Length: 102
Image (cartoon, rainbow, N blue to C red; front, top):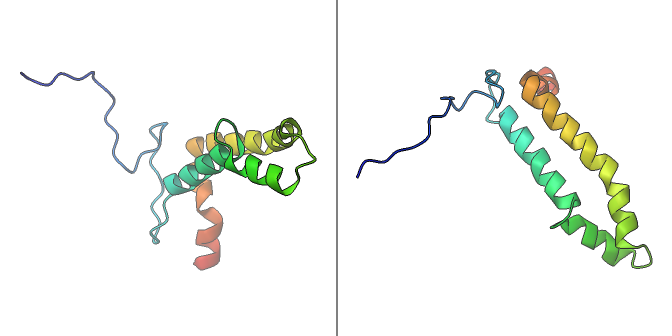
């Protein structure tokens, strides 16, 4: 039986989610790895997993988990904004490292 799949836009590994080409770098670090790292950080400070929230709760048991969550939300929103910016302008992910490392 032939395999049938829904058509999807073809993207090469060097294209971002918006279809823009990721800039090439001389190093092995790529802009999509920066986006992946920020996504992992968001997962560590937001529920339902929120491992870092429980670590903070263990360090400061007198502070409620709700207060800890409310305190971490501005940081999560800033990281979401950073991901959006990196999707539209992928060159900013490695601009400073390229400038400093030559």
